[in-house]
Image 1 (cartoon, rainbow, N blue to C red):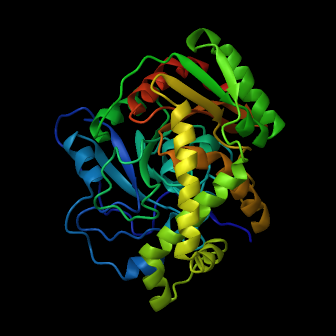
Image 2: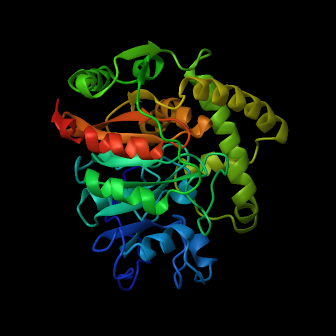
Image 3: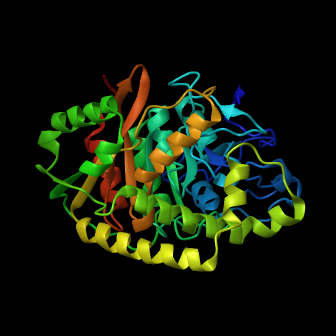
Length: 397
């Protein structure tokens, strides 16, 4: 199904920018907000017009929104997202597919597609998204941006639409590493765990999932960064295969999103675009027993990953297995990419660990990102790493 290419912003965008405090860490910076976070006086749409129509204007700002305003940032728009955040493609059948300015004619990645598109277009200084199954990391890779998925639970999600509470995390994008770093102290709460980076583990099974050109670019980048990083060791992170972990993630995600939106879907029968409709239909069939078995697998995966990703250790992998697919590619091609990508994104998702994607270079003119997964509470170390490695970013393939 051909995809309409359009702007990053929802049709029900803000009538005017919302100015932040006169001073603060983010004073003078502009930000756009994924249409899942409440903004006082506005309706929150979650990428679906039927959901939007059923909502009343929010009476208060989401915690993330209020913190940004209090820190001086000015909100300039609300951005398109995939319906109920149930995709990593960036295609929205109702509002169109936000343009990928760094790879015209190709997907921007989702579900934080509009936020990534706006940041890559220099329409804002930074952009807020969310990441459950890759919804910041994949757009960051596709659009050539700095992007982070934060440690699960470190950023307050009050006033944000949920998807799968076991995995939902806030993230953000920027073109500029310094700006990217500045957002951290404003939004990050909870326990920070400081440690010097002393160990680097290359995830061989994740590299094996990537296209050869992507893997080669990332290996070249790591070689160039050798003086900035510990000498690498190599490991297969998933002893039983990444598909086993991906399937556990899928089942839990399906069960949890149905618990949030199943009643609405059953009662109102909203119009869904391709892919999202099928995923909701499948989610309705996931039983409590299926979810319980998947959670056992999640616990095993989480224990294994966190045992390796101790404070001071970084896990490294390509952010995405491929460059962005063409926006007009057949739906089946988009779905095939989703399956491949989820084998890689489920690692941070199941473990609840932070992951940063760096815009490392291009392949056939399309951006590709390199990722580092840190330890629980190691978000600040990843943001600092982005600054330190920024001189290696943007290398041409």
